[in-house]
Amino acid sequence: MGTKIPIDRDTVERMILLGMDVDRYEAQVIPDLQARVGTLTRALKELVGAVAEARRNPLFAGQVDTASARAQLVLETGLGQLRNGKPPSA
Image 1 (tube, rainbow, N blue to C red):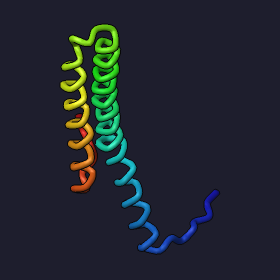
Image 2: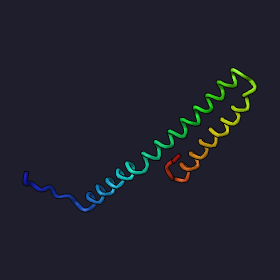
Image 3: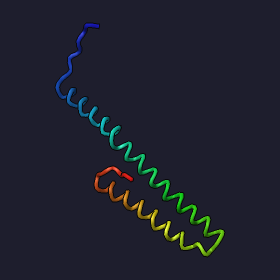
Image 4: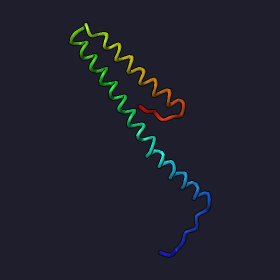
């Protein structure tokens, strides 16, 4: 096991950059995506609940509009952040 394998400088630099990318994904991107999933899940649950309530009682139809507007805002906020090259967050 004493054999050394020569590695050129470019390969070492690529390995370091790859390691930095993995660290960034673990520390920032993955938690941001998990938070985003939570935000989207809450907005979807609110919208589904409002639709169900409106089906039971038409007087609550206004809740559907409110929940729909919130869900739309959550979606647009996330899409805007992705367009700017930033990971989505809650």
